[in-house]
Image (tube, rainbow, N blue to C red; front, top):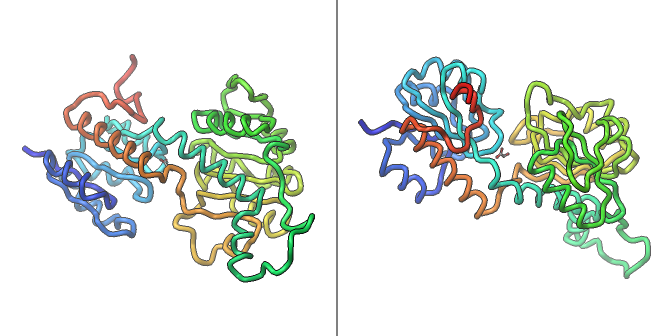
Length: 322
Ligand code: GLV
């Protein structure tokens, strides 16, 4: 029988056509998130789910989807999936590591430079027709990445790629990882010291119960005046209320790709602040990277449905020891 696959997000027609040659698809095609009730009813007789961020895959959904053989996510992060419940149910969960490392690291550096050189603020200024004065020595002054100490929180592949990039700009690089990790060119420091020493802090830890609000009010309070916090990881890693307070007080600056609630609510106080650059979760958003992510997710999906080991599995313990 042709496997039934639920696709929880709109995908390019070419990708859906390709999937449709092998599977019976129930595909969500609207831009808003797929309602849980629709997902529950479609998944009730599904063999697999192809998903991404924004659609929670809960323990209840898994319990009510007895035919499921695998879940494949078009993302490296799998915090939208109850991984524990999937593992207990014997379901391998696929994800897409590696291919988005460079794009996400580029975005982190782009945010640093945008904040430090006030690019977005200056663009708004020019467009508003406010550029009336000539060149002067104190006009729109920023700070230099080459003169900065950059603190990397989380030295996985993306954190290390950011460290290499900012190192090549001439920055001094310090870093912290939950399990101590030697990285060439990165001086390992205690997390609290990192917050006190760095001029720029870039967050690259996965979202887990342990990393929730790792960047808390106390650590934000340790940051140097004018220091920059960049988050391209997950919103839950930063206490956003504490961050807003520090930004509103003009103590620090920030560049954010991710938020505690996405899409960012229209009444978020972040929207009224000039010392923060905001982008809508675009870390991996280049055409080539998204193509590579969809390819990996399709390969994971096919492997899971054939009962083979997923090449990029977020819960390898599902296969048992060895
Ligand atoms: C994006 O945030 C991802 O996890 O791939």
